[in-house]
Length: 342
Image (cartoon, rainbow, N blue to C red; front, side, top):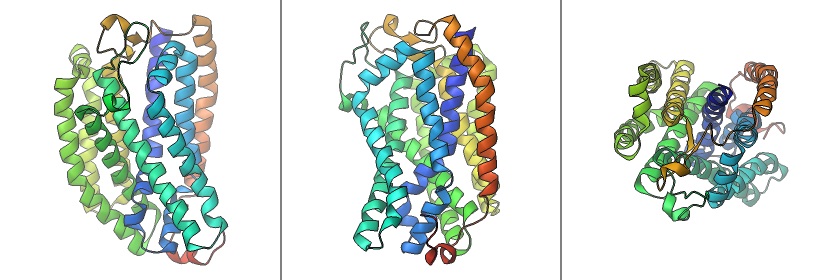
């Protein structure tokens, strides 16, 4: 029972991370296309500024939960996927540094350098996370010793790359809508237009991914076993349609909420389809790591559950306060001459 509870919590942590940090990664990726001058680039940085580090806490929590609740899965994951995870780590480091360093100097080359770090540090994690999860969905070539039979290029298969493109599009639409919510005037309109332009490619790729998933994975098997799980892909579809409807009505907050539902529903569907597997093996079903054969002791899971029950609501309450406190829109005029912010 505890193993199942922690599997669900593991999935929730990843879902919350993708929903929250998704708009940050999307905005960073689109920085050159959404901002035409330094003041507008500062708007992009400042609409993320109060939130990005709190959002990434959920990534650390998801990794920490994997380490503590499913240590064998953590060990195999971080050894077999060492190269992409190191690329992910270095990209996120570059991105984090760019927030702190960009405003330290006024020189154009200095700010351009950190703007480039922001773009690379946002696009690469979105792509790598999509590739990684798509490969997990279809199964990794792991043997009974947990050794990956392949390398980084093994992961860059058609289904894996399709997952990467899907994540990039999900996050860029999500980020564009966040800009529409958190800015005003021309920046707001630009964010809305970008979201509208990217929505159709997202629809095509998402549809293709759902079809490919039926052939490349067995994620739909659990939906057939427990029909209630169909609510997750349905939520993703309704969210995708709703985001476009609300966008057309210029209800940007609702459009962003619908986009969040799309990301949340898609992630929950993938995690639910995996259950009870955490790292499926495409070479040997016996080598598959599950919530049961890779879990920590009952005592460890019980103690961790008590900690999670106390502290996760506190983190959620704090983040709610942050989002409420910094809910006001940001304009180029406000940041253009100000020395505060990013």
